[in-house]
Image 1 (tube, rainbow, N blue to C red):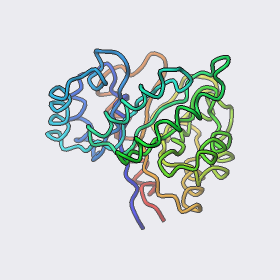
Image 2: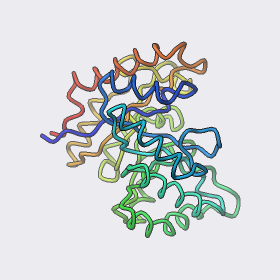
Image 3: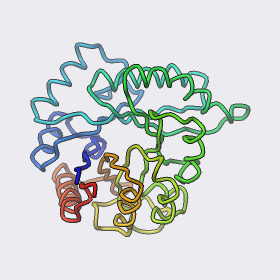
Image 4: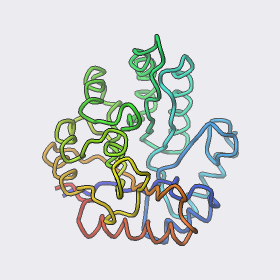
Length: 268
């Protein structure tokens, strides 16, 4: 059995102090983190930072005893500026030591319906150059893995696969992951393991084990496809968010315990 790498998405601690969040994540028991990068200048990790500033962040991550696994760098792939913007995210992922970079596709624009394929074709050489694996996240209009797999199969790139979000297919796509992922397991390159509670279109993403996502079937499908892809645990709570850092700690600790107890971190 080969263990899958499991990270915690830093976005779970959004709006809380970055370095303190790092320390808490390590104390909970995580070894890896998925970093987040937005276009806002006040985000700790973004393409506007100098190399010196980013090196300080690298040091903080190392001092906390953590390793960067992935970078969540959402970029609207339908815009004219998308290729350059995504290349910068790929370069940022490489600089931070991440071998995975995840993005949503964005919103289709009139007259640019085929722009995504063009954007991804243009960034492929950079993915190969830096050996970065790009994950196209189930999100918004593109929330069903079996549909998104048609794009990744057309691209036929070992560096561009699906980032399968186990709750987004329910929330955005009204589709159960246990019905969907067997149809695209061979095209999954990364996962966001996220729980879903409440109504299907309700923003309610609690700790693992507190909802109704059939994680057993998700990992069975991956194992049947011989797919040992790593994943991040993502907790987005409700629209009010967590009440404190301690509340995030509790949810993250419970989620990691759930993964360990069910042996979902092992590739069988």
